[in-house]
Image (cartoon, rainbow, N blue to C red):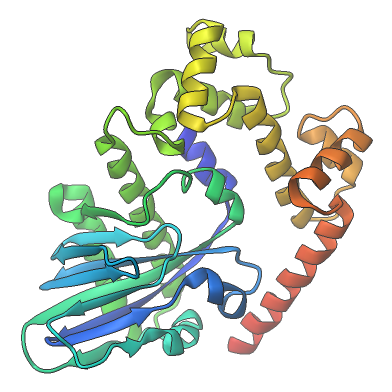
Length: 332
């Protein structure tokens, strides 16, 4: 498998929540920083990534630093770090605070949001991806605060847009399995956006996605993700990807900001953190599974990375997920 597929498989993504907006100019709403509200809205989810898909008309996304991004029909914009922003068309007298409605949307209320003054019409679908913090060091690493692509460039993008639009449009019917279908389609849209962004990156760009696209660095990443517990050496990695030791080290460090084995050591601890939250497997077994020969060495490394011992990390995360389960159960 390629590095991106392996990384996406290794990061749990929660269900994406949609809402559909039908607006007539002038209109506008403000989206708060999702990292500030994530613990309240989705306990146990460490990262919320918002996106907007314009289905009709046009809109303007504005960030707090003054950056503006114009959107037209078919455009998808993803805000990887969940920064505060506004979406508007025209000159509204005030921006609707969407933060007050996020709890309703995250609980599965997909009713259409309508607003505006009766002018030019804009339709768009909004959603939020929930994922683990380790995504910050994988496919979210090195991304700008906004990614924009147009979904109507080919049959795949058009099919995704049409499918999502259809599922959201029939939300009021509450058909069985609808939330699962919405979640899967959202994930497909997210992956397709990342793929197109990778393909268009300039050659001088650095970061995880740029590295994954590179034949040498991408090959090394795929090997490290596929066999993280193997006793890798730089020489063996270089041989596997068909490069010299120096070329691999230089290219990997340029794209990823660290040498291959440093990346591997950190990735093993990220995998261990996930295993600690997935069951009651003994810590010694988890240490062995991710490539450590001694439990003591694993505990020291884990504490350096996360600032807490593995056992305490497991207990804290279990409490967070239990809290989320209680909230989800109450919503159902």
